[in-house]
Image (cartoon, rainbow, N blue to C red):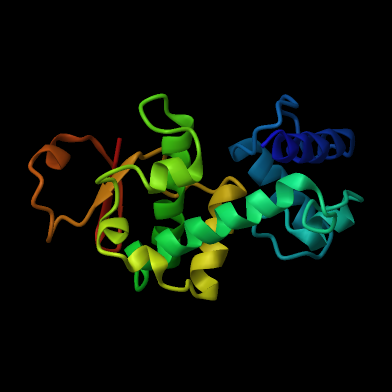
Length: 192
């Protein structure tokens, strides 16, 4: 995923040069970069959602990775699709931020040394997600789930760094209740 970091580095470099961003150029789409992108979007008449999508990248004069046929884009799109399938099967009917948060949990696990270090590795880890064991992972995701997966990949994390979530009204695992909660969105409680 060096490509994504490189794209973020380009975004940070340009925003810093133009005075929107004062943080360090580290290739990480963190909260400072997010607010700098929103500031840029507002000033340029774009939807200020903090998502560096094609229109925003275009306005910055950056070629979006989705426009070029690089090797990473195909694996990236299959990761987005797999993540969207998980979001749809685990969280359809939840508020949008709750769907993004479920995707963010997967990405937080990828970053954590306690879990596999790829999106498929995390999702297909034995016993990790009910949707995999009951086959719902194979349902086709809707647009909302796809957008939620992409937002999480772009760096939005409404779960505040959570690596677990559960539904308090259906949870049978006693251990999960011992985890420190970060936030509750819809029917899901997110925790570390």
